[in-house]
Image (tube, one colour):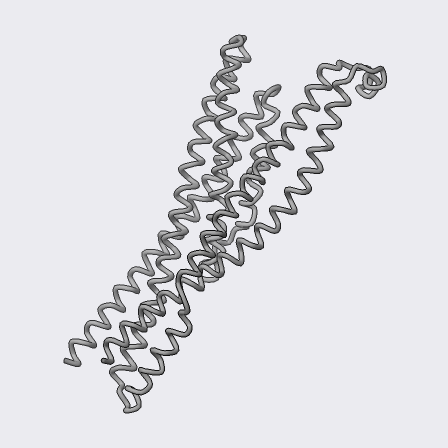
Length: 312
Protein backbone atom coordinates (compact mmCIF):
# COMPACT_ATOMS: atom_id res chain seq x y z
CA UNK A 1 0.00 0.00 0.00
CA UNK A 2 2.79 2.40 0.92
CA UNK A 3 4.63 1.85 -2.35
CA UNK A 4 1.42 2.43 -4.27
CA UNK A 5 0.93 5.75 -2.46
CA UNK A 6 4.55 6.66 -3.16
CA UNK A 7 3.99 6.09 -6.86
CA UNK A 8 0.79 8.14 -6.79
CA UNK A 9 2.54 10.96 -4.94
CA UNK A 10 5.45 11.03 -7.40
CA UNK A 11 3.02 11.21 -10.32
CA UNK A 12 1.00 14.03 -8.75
CA UNK A 13 4.16 15.97 -7.85
CA UNK A 14 5.38 15.69 -11.43
CA UNK A 15 2.09 17.07 -12.70
CA UNK A 16 2.13 19.87 -10.10
CA UNK A 17 5.65 20.91 -11.08
CA UNK A 18 4.65 20.91 -14.74
CA UNK A 19 1.47 22.88 -13.95
CA UNK A 20 3.43 25.45 -11.92
CA UNK A 21 5.90 25.82 -14.78
CA UNK A 22 3.01 26.33 -17.19
CA UNK A 23 1.55 28.98 -14.88
CA UNK A 24 4.85 30.84 -14.77
CA UNK A 25 5.05 30.73 -18.56
CA UNK A 26 1.45 31.94 -18.77
CA UNK A 27 2.15 34.85 -16.43
CA UNK A 28 5.23 35.87 -18.42
CA UNK A 29 3.33 35.47 -21.69
CA UNK A 30 0.49 37.70 -20.51
CA UNK A 31 2.97 40.37 -19.44
CA UNK A 32 4.72 40.10 -22.79
CA UNK A 33 1.38 40.32 -24.62
CA UNK A 34 0.55 43.54 -22.78
CA UNK A 35 3.92 45.06 -23.73
CA UNK A 36 3.57 43.96 -27.36
CA UNK A 37 0.13 45.55 -27.60
CA UNK A 38 1.48 48.83 -26.25
CA UNK A 39 4.35 48.63 -28.74
CA UNK A 40 1.93 47.93 -31.59
CA UNK A 41 -0.08 51.04 -30.71
CA UNK A 42 3.05 53.19 -30.80
CA UNK A 43 4.18 51.64 -34.09
CA UNK A 44 0.73 52.22 -35.57
CA UNK A 45 0.94 55.91 -34.71
CA UNK A 46 4.39 56.10 -36.31
CA UNK A 47 3.12 54.22 -39.35
CA UNK A 48 0.24 56.65 -39.81
CA UNK A 49 2.61 59.58 -39.52
CA UNK A 50 5.00 58.13 -42.10
CA UNK A 51 2.07 57.44 -44.44
CA UNK A 52 0.92 61.06 -44.20
CA UNK A 53 4.47 62.28 -44.82
CA UNK A 54 4.73 60.06 -47.88
CA UNK A 55 1.37 61.21 -49.26
CA UNK A 56 2.39 64.84 -48.74
CA UNK A 57 5.78 64.47 -50.45
CA UNK A 58 4.27 62.55 -53.38
CA UNK A 59 2.03 65.55 -54.15
CA UNK A 60 2.94 67.99 -56.92
CA UNK A 61 2.44 71.31 -55.12
CA UNK A 62 5.10 73.98 -54.86
CA UNK A 63 4.91 73.71 -51.07
CA UNK A 64 5.96 70.10 -51.25
CA UNK A 65 8.88 70.98 -53.49
CA UNK A 66 9.98 73.61 -51.00
CA UNK A 67 9.65 70.97 -48.28
CA UNK A 68 12.28 69.01 -50.19
CA UNK A 69 14.47 72.14 -50.07
CA UNK A 70 14.21 72.47 -53.85
CA UNK A 71 16.29 69.32 -54.20
CA UNK A 72 15.67 66.16 -56.17
CA UNK A 73 12.06 65.33 -55.45
CA UNK A 74 12.52 61.72 -56.57
CA UNK A 75 15.12 61.21 -53.86
CA UNK A 76 12.84 62.80 -51.27
CA UNK A 77 9.98 60.51 -52.22
CA UNK A 78 12.24 57.44 -52.12
CA UNK A 79 13.49 58.41 -48.67
CA UNK A 80 9.93 58.76 -47.36
CA UNK A 81 8.99 55.40 -48.89
CA UNK A 82 11.89 53.72 -47.14
CA UNK A 83 10.95 55.25 -43.80
CA UNK A 84 7.32 54.18 -44.28
CA UNK A 85 8.37 50.64 -45.23
CA UNK A 86 10.63 50.40 -42.18
CA UNK A 87 7.74 51.27 -39.86
CA UNK A 88 5.45 48.86 -41.75
CA UNK A 89 7.93 45.99 -41.30
CA UNK A 90 8.25 46.67 -37.58
CA UNK A 91 4.48 46.95 -37.17
CA UNK A 92 3.83 43.71 -39.10
CA UNK A 93 6.42 41.84 -37.04
CA UNK A 94 4.83 42.89 -33.75
CA UNK A 95 1.33 42.16 -35.06
CA UNK A 96 2.51 38.69 -36.13
CA UNK A 97 4.09 38.14 -32.71
CA UNK A 98 0.82 39.08 -30.94
CA UNK A 99 -1.13 36.58 -33.04
CA UNK A 100 1.38 33.81 -32.25
CA UNK A 101 1.44 34.69 -28.57
CA UNK A 102 -2.36 34.61 -28.33
CA UNK A 103 -2.32 31.06 -29.72
CA UNK A 104 0.44 30.08 -27.26
CA UNK A 105 -1.52 31.57 -24.30
CA UNK A 106 -4.67 29.71 -25.38
CA UNK A 107 -2.74 26.43 -25.49
CA UNK A 108 -1.19 27.06 -22.07
CA UNK A 109 -4.56 27.83 -20.48
CA UNK A 110 -6.10 24.69 -21.96
CA UNK A 111 -3.17 22.58 -20.79
CA UNK A 112 -3.41 23.93 -17.23
CA UNK A 113 -7.19 23.40 -17.16
CA UNK A 114 -6.87 19.81 -18.42
CA UNK A 115 -4.57 18.89 -15.51
CA UNK A 116 -7.48 19.04 -13.06
CA UNK A 117 -7.40 19.71 -9.27
CA UNK A 118 -3.84 18.58 -8.52
CA UNK A 119 -3.58 20.31 -5.12
CA UNK A 120 -6.63 18.44 -3.88
CA UNK A 121 -5.26 15.15 -5.21
CA UNK A 122 -1.92 15.82 -3.53
CA UNK A 123 -3.55 16.57 -0.17
CA UNK A 124 -5.60 13.35 -0.29
CA UNK A 125 -2.50 11.22 -0.93
CA UNK A 126 -0.53 12.96 1.82
CA UNK A 127 -3.34 12.33 4.33
CA UNK A 128 -3.46 8.64 3.39
CA UNK A 129 0.32 8.38 3.75
CA UNK A 130 0.24 10.07 7.15
CA UNK A 131 -2.09 7.36 8.41
CA UNK A 132 0.36 4.65 7.31
CA UNK A 133 3.42 6.49 8.62
CA UNK A 134 2.15 7.08 12.13
CA UNK A 135 4.56 4.35 13.12
CA UNK A 136 8.13 5.53 12.66
CA UNK A 137 8.97 4.13 9.27
CA UNK A 138 12.40 5.55 8.42
CA UNK A 139 12.60 3.59 5.21
CA UNK A 140 9.38 5.04 3.83
CA UNK A 141 10.32 8.59 4.83
CA UNK A 142 13.74 8.31 3.19
CA UNK A 143 12.27 6.80 0.05
CA UNK A 144 9.78 9.65 -0.25
CA UNK A 145 12.59 12.18 0.18
CA UNK A 146 14.71 10.59 -2.57
CA UNK A 147 11.72 10.24 -4.89
CA UNK A 148 10.76 13.91 -4.52
CA UNK A 149 14.35 15.04 -5.13
CA UNK A 150 14.40 12.88 -8.24
CA UNK A 151 11.08 14.32 -9.40
CA UNK A 152 12.42 17.88 -9.08
CA UNK A 153 15.52 16.95 -11.07
CA UNK A 154 13.38 15.37 -13.78
CA UNK A 155 11.30 18.53 -14.02
CA UNK A 156 14.40 20.73 -14.26
CA UNK A 157 15.85 18.38 -16.87
CA UNK A 158 12.67 18.76 -18.95
CA UNK A 159 12.83 22.56 -18.71
CA UNK A 160 16.45 22.51 -19.87
CA UNK A 161 15.58 20.24 -22.80
CA UNK A 162 12.75 22.53 -23.89
CA UNK A 163 15.00 25.60 -23.67
CA UNK A 164 17.70 23.83 -25.67
CA UNK A 165 15.18 22.78 -28.32
CA UNK A 166 13.90 26.36 -28.65
CA UNK A 167 17.48 27.64 -28.96
CA UNK A 168 18.30 25.06 -31.61
CA UNK A 169 15.26 26.15 -33.62
CA UNK A 170 16.38 29.80 -33.38
CA UNK A 171 19.79 28.80 -34.73
CA UNK A 172 18.21 26.86 -37.61
CA UNK A 173 16.05 29.84 -38.58
CA UNK A 174 18.93 32.30 -38.27
CA UNK A 175 21.03 30.18 -40.61
CA UNK A 176 18.21 30.43 -43.16
CA UNK A 177 18.20 34.22 -42.83
CA UNK A 178 22.00 34.28 -43.12
CA UNK A 179 21.84 32.16 -46.28
CA UNK A 180 19.32 34.54 -47.88
CA UNK A 181 21.41 37.59 -46.95
CA UNK A 182 24.60 35.99 -48.27
CA UNK A 183 22.81 35.36 -51.56
CA UNK A 184 21.46 38.93 -51.61
CA UNK A 185 24.94 40.26 -50.93
CA UNK A 186 26.32 38.26 -53.84
CA UNK A 187 23.63 39.47 -56.21
CA UNK A 188 24.12 43.00 -54.86
CA UNK A 189 27.78 42.92 -55.85
CA UNK A 190 26.79 42.05 -59.41
CA UNK A 191 24.13 44.78 -59.24
CA UNK A 192 26.75 47.39 -58.43
CA UNK A 193 28.80 46.20 -61.40
CA UNK A 194 25.87 46.86 -63.71
CA UNK A 195 24.10 43.52 -63.63
CA UNK A 196 20.83 44.93 -64.90
CA UNK A 197 17.17 44.42 -64.01
CA UNK A 198 17.33 40.62 -63.59
CA UNK A 199 20.19 40.85 -61.10
CA UNK A 200 18.41 43.62 -59.17
CA UNK A 201 15.24 41.53 -58.99
CA UNK A 202 17.21 38.49 -57.81
CA UNK A 203 18.84 40.55 -55.05
CA UNK A 204 15.50 41.95 -53.87
CA UNK A 205 13.94 38.47 -53.97
CA UNK A 206 16.57 37.18 -51.52
CA UNK A 207 16.09 40.25 -49.33
CA UNK A 208 12.33 39.56 -49.26
CA UNK A 209 13.10 35.97 -48.23
CA UNK A 210 15.22 37.25 -45.34
CA UNK A 211 12.47 39.61 -44.20
CA UNK A 212 9.86 36.86 -44.23
CA UNK A 213 12.15 34.49 -42.33
CA UNK A 214 12.85 37.17 -39.71
CA UNK A 215 9.24 37.02 -38.47
CA UNK A 216 9.70 33.34 -37.63
CA UNK A 217 13.07 34.08 -36.02
CA UNK A 218 11.66 36.82 -33.79
CA UNK A 219 8.72 34.66 -32.70
CA UNK A 220 11.03 31.77 -31.76
CA UNK A 221 13.44 34.16 -30.01
CA UNK A 222 10.60 35.30 -27.77
CA UNK A 223 9.77 31.69 -26.94
CA UNK A 224 13.44 31.01 -26.22
CA UNK A 225 13.54 34.06 -23.96
CA UNK A 226 10.53 32.78 -21.98
CA UNK A 227 12.17 29.39 -21.51
CA UNK A 228 15.43 31.01 -20.34
CA UNK A 229 13.66 33.31 -17.90
CA UNK A 230 12.01 30.24 -16.35
CA UNK A 231 15.38 28.64 -15.49
CA UNK A 232 17.51 31.76 -15.08
CA UNK A 233 17.64 31.42 -11.30
CA UNK A 234 19.45 28.10 -11.74
CA UNK A 235 21.89 29.23 -14.46
CA UNK A 236 23.84 32.48 -14.63
CA UNK A 237 23.80 33.43 -18.31
CA UNK A 238 25.58 36.72 -17.65
CA UNK A 239 23.94 38.33 -20.71
CA UNK A 240 20.98 40.62 -21.31
CA UNK A 241 18.52 38.15 -22.81
CA UNK A 242 15.81 40.83 -22.79
CA UNK A 243 17.39 42.28 -25.93
CA UNK A 244 16.09 39.25 -27.86
CA UNK A 245 12.68 40.92 -28.00
CA UNK A 246 13.98 43.81 -30.15
CA UNK A 247 16.36 41.85 -32.35
CA UNK A 248 14.14 42.27 -35.43
CA UNK A 249 14.31 46.06 -35.04
CA UNK A 250 18.10 46.07 -35.39
CA UNK A 251 17.83 43.70 -38.32
CA UNK A 252 15.25 45.82 -40.16
CA UNK A 253 17.09 49.07 -39.37
CA UNK A 254 20.09 47.74 -41.27
CA UNK A 255 18.26 45.93 -44.05
CA UNK A 256 15.61 48.39 -45.17
CA UNK A 257 18.01 50.85 -46.77
CA UNK A 258 19.73 48.18 -48.85
CA UNK A 259 17.64 49.37 -51.78
CA UNK A 260 20.08 52.23 -52.16
CA UNK A 261 23.16 51.17 -50.19
CA UNK A 262 24.72 47.74 -50.68
CA UNK A 263 26.67 48.08 -47.42
CA UNK A 264 23.45 47.82 -45.40
CA UNK A 265 22.98 44.18 -46.44
CA UNK A 266 26.32 43.45 -44.82
CA UNK A 267 25.26 45.24 -41.65
CA UNK A 268 22.12 43.11 -41.32
CA UNK A 269 24.25 40.03 -42.02
CA UNK A 270 26.60 40.98 -39.18
CA UNK A 271 23.61 41.44 -36.84
CA UNK A 272 22.42 37.91 -37.63
CA UNK A 273 25.90 36.43 -37.21
CA UNK A 274 26.38 38.16 -33.85
CA UNK A 275 23.05 36.74 -32.63
CA UNK A 276 24.11 33.28 -33.80
CA UNK A 277 27.23 33.52 -31.63
CA UNK A 278 25.15 34.56 -28.59
CA UNK A 279 22.55 31.81 -29.02
CA UNK A 280 25.15 29.09 -29.60
CA UNK A 281 26.95 30.20 -26.44
CA UNK A 282 23.74 29.87 -24.41
CA UNK A 283 22.96 26.48 -25.95
CA UNK A 284 26.44 25.30 -24.98
CA UNK A 285 25.80 26.24 -21.35
CA UNK A 286 22.34 24.64 -21.43
CA UNK A 287 23.84 21.39 -22.67
CA UNK A 288 26.48 21.48 -19.94
CA UNK A 289 23.76 21.96 -17.31
CA UNK A 290 21.74 19.16 -18.91
CA UNK A 291 24.71 16.83 -18.59
CA UNK A 292 25.12 17.73 -14.90
CA UNK A 293 21.39 17.27 -14.21
CA UNK A 294 21.24 13.90 -15.95
CA UNK A 295 24.24 12.75 -13.92
CA UNK A 296 22.46 13.75 -10.69
CA UNK A 297 19.32 11.94 -11.86
CA UNK A 298 21.29 8.75 -12.46
CA UNK A 299 22.87 9.04 -9.00
CA UNK A 300 19.43 9.44 -7.36
CA UNK A 301 18.11 6.44 -9.25
CA UNK A 302 21.05 4.32 -8.10
CA UNK A 303 20.58 5.55 -4.51
CA UNK A 304 16.89 4.67 -4.60
CA UNK A 305 17.49 1.22 -6.10
CA UNK A 306 20.23 0.42 -3.60
CA UNK A 307 18.01 1.43 -0.70
CA UNK A 308 15.17 -0.77 -1.95
CA UNK A 309 17.52 -3.73 -2.49
CA UNK A 310 18.97 -3.48 0.99
CA UNK A 311 15.51 -3.22 2.55
CA UNK A 312 14.25 -6.46 0.95
